[in-house]
Structure formats: C-alpha cells, structure tokens
Length: 159
Image 1 (spheres, one colour):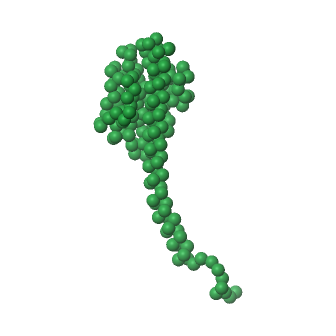
Image 2: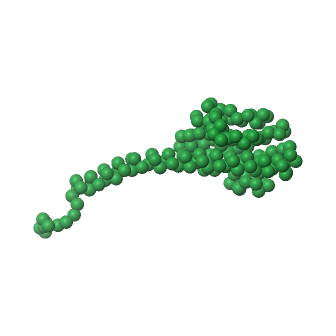
Image 3: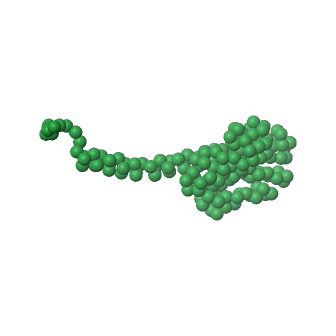
C-alpha cells in the first residue's frame, strides 16, 4: 500500500510537543490545587472549633448547670454539634483530628491537629472557654485541661 503525501494527521514531534505542554501545565496546577485543599481544611478546622465553642457555651448554660463543659461525646449526645464531630471523644473531620477535654474546674480546651502534617494542613488550632482561637504554625498545639490554657510553639491568636 502506498503512502499518500496528502494524508492529514499529527506527526510524532507535534504530539510530543502537546504532551510536554500538558505536563508543564499539570506541574504548575497540581501544587496550587494541593495548597487550596490545605487552606480549605484549615478553614474547616477553624469553623469546627467555633462550633465547638458555641456548643460548649450552650451546654454549660443548659445541661452543665452553669458549671460543667462537655467533651465531643457530650456535645454530640446533646445534639449541639453534628454527628461527625460528636461521634466520639476524639474524631476526624476534613483532614484534622479534633479533641475536647474538660475538667471539674469549669474549663475546657479543644484542639484540631492535622492528621498528616503538611499534607492535610500545616497549622494546628485550639480554643478554650474565652473563645479565642489559637494557631500553631509548626503543627504542635496543646491544652492544659486543668487551666484551659492553649500552648504550642508559636501559638498565636487568630481571632
């Protein structure tokens, strides 16, 4: 069979150029996509801590007899937070692990720590009874259950 010079199509070089261009665009877009996902996870964690704080204020004023705060199971059982957050004492949502501890000294402390540091989130967050949300830039955040004090390397209030 003879090859006709008038056949239309792409040459191998043209196809390679297109593949290289697609690879370059993907190399630029994928890191931006991952950064957007981390930012969305962090925003979700902050929003969930706000919800936990509001729910704990309601819990203390109603079921806690103006004295006691609740942990995640208590808040979930009272239907003050969604079942994903209130399903257990430590729960995972949107790439963060949430925990709320309370003590008999009328304080509570809630934390949100990235499940995979650097991938699902960079910062960790914490909140206690005053309602100030703290962020630790290196992913370490801790709370003292007896005093409700948020601590961590570089922990600063964000709101």
